[in-house]
Amino acid sequence: MNKKSSNTYTAIDLFSGAGGLSLGAQSAGFDVVVAVEKDKGAGLTFKKNHPNSIVMNDDIRDINTQLLNINPFIIFGGPPCQGFSTSNTHTRNLDNKNNFLFEEFVRFVRELSPEWFLFENVEGIVSFNKGNTIKHIERCFTNLGYTVSSKVTCASDYSVPQNRNRFIMLGNKSGIYFEFPNGKKTKITVAEAIADLPDLENGQQLEIGDYKNKGSSYAKKMRKGSTKSLQNYVSRNADYVIERYSYIGQGQNWRAIPERLMQNYKNSQNCHSGIYKRLDPDKPSVVISNYRKNMLIHPFQNRGLSVREAARLQSFPDTFIFEGSIMEIQQQIGNAVPPLMAEAIFKKILSYE
Image (cartoon, rainbow, N blue to C red; front, side, top):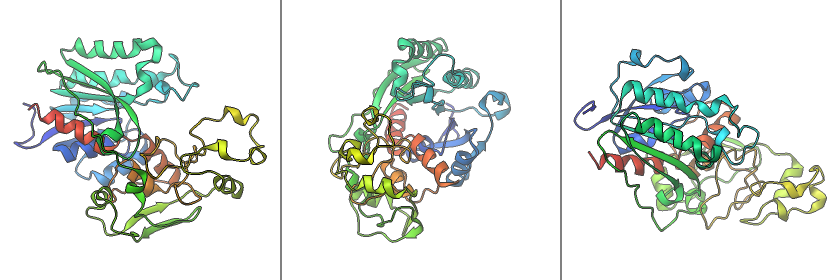
């Protein structure tokens, strides 16, 4: 077996971002020895939270796998997915070179021959190019001798307080048809996730804050090892934006804003349903992607979400520290795979060993 020791399994994280997949893998029992991430800010965040991993801040196309000198048990990661997203029509075409970075993922698997691989992406990849892209990717792996299983999973099924769908493809060389872990019927709500975090003002940059209460069982899990709430950073919105927020009730979106306050939109009827969305405290969150750009609103306060609140909704623990500017951090959080969802899948992989 490609084990590093009797109780750890070596892993390589490609297109790692801030490290949501790696955090889940580590919690499940994997040893992430190498991460590849081109973005410098995300690479710094990964290194900050995974100090024992080698972080290669390079273009994956320039990396010679033979120089890594690693025999990984698993390779996992998610190539840039903007071109596959159903919400991004500008890059959703076959001319976008980023749409073919999955070929680099396939190259690593082919050249390093891990026992397992895990490939993740947005659910839009399933329908991209009339479904031919995903068929091609699966064929690439089956031709390498892997038994492949795939599914669109929802993060809220795995104790993540967010209705976030991700496409997951797994493969192994032992002929195992992977069965995805069963989801939990009880969902974690927004209130359970963030109600213990500090009250904040529009634009406030509170580095260290006190927890307001003991918190839910989910909050206690996120607070393990932490005595204070860190990185409570809120983007500053213009006064007219805050006024718009005041008209939006829990679970409502831009449609609740008086038309007189939406005059800067040529046609407000074309607004995406996720714009100006106030979170419902009694349900899992909507997708935390670019939550600043979408202007997701705190369920009780007239402001956007803080960095720590968004991290909680992605299931990053409070001990996880993000590096970079607030805009860079917001993007890192929005791009990440929820660690708790990743952990459930990685634990299921190890159940076959």
